[in-house]
Length: 167
Image (cartoon, rainbow, N blue to C red; front, top):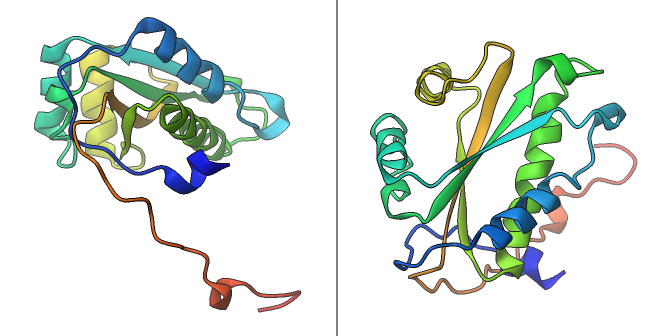
């Protein structure tokens, strides 16, 4: 459980490649996420090409770390695989969170970059990566070995946000 509490968004990376076996472990964690009707509507694109990472940073205002990342994983939802329409977003978000926790476990730096529902980001990424019509990019996970140390997160539990039985 410590990975959940210690996870931080890391945007600065050392010049060291993330090995393929670690990327595979991240994808295994992602594909272990729960999904509505167990349909697992996710797809993934691994990006290591620096020019592609740079192009994404030009249209995504919060992706300035991508050109320095070792790799990125795009998480996409396949609308044809949905048993329960609309739940692909929750399913893919669960896959993203699993990857972020696994990245912490592997001592990798990672940050979640939102794509969906921003139409301009969705359209630009689909065009850049040749994504089919019925596949929607949800997020990008930027990856690398950390080149920054962030202090552990402060306690976020807030009892005032917890309601028993009713609001």
